[in-house]
Image (cartoon, rainbow over all chains, first blue to last red; front, side, top):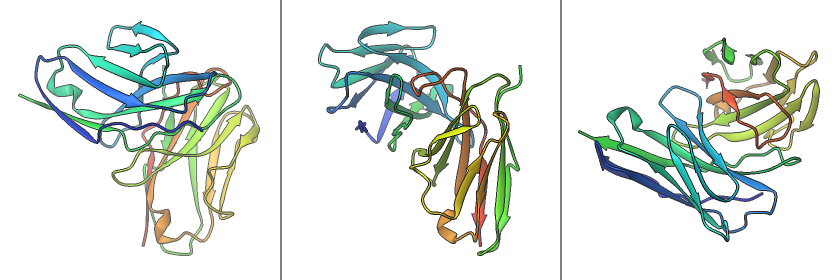
Length: 111
Length: 115
């Protein structure tokens, strides 16, 4: 079961780009990398997922280097509503059903 | 369309009582997951269903915890003889297809407080 390490907290000003890096040194060949966002009193919400290189959607970008031992979630021009906890997970493509959420990164966006 | 719903949203139990937490996944979703989230921590995996089959229950912390999904849709997480350490938010998630790499849709959770 691949575990992840993220910074516990980060602060950013509104309008800035935020990059949150996650380490997953023992990622397995079949593992995908997935990021979730969680607001207080809500369940986590899927942000983005990738296997290698770069993935971009309307919300964020995910950068994965060739060795896949880390990944970086990039949030462009954050707003106050992006204040939340962000979790990086690695999960087996087909047979592994456990997700290790860890403690996540608490992002605070400052006006 | 409707998302994942959970009931009750809040539950207070006296130590030693049994509780049952319900999860209604998104219609048609094959996979269903239960997680336990303690205050200030990330969700911790409890168990996983693919349709009605419980494929992984390795995260259940003790034999007091039991989950079922008899018809492959609604699921119930039951905790017998509740203890104070069981106090947490219990999250249910469902995904369209099998396999943990698929996007999981989470419900709002049930906050359980054991006195």
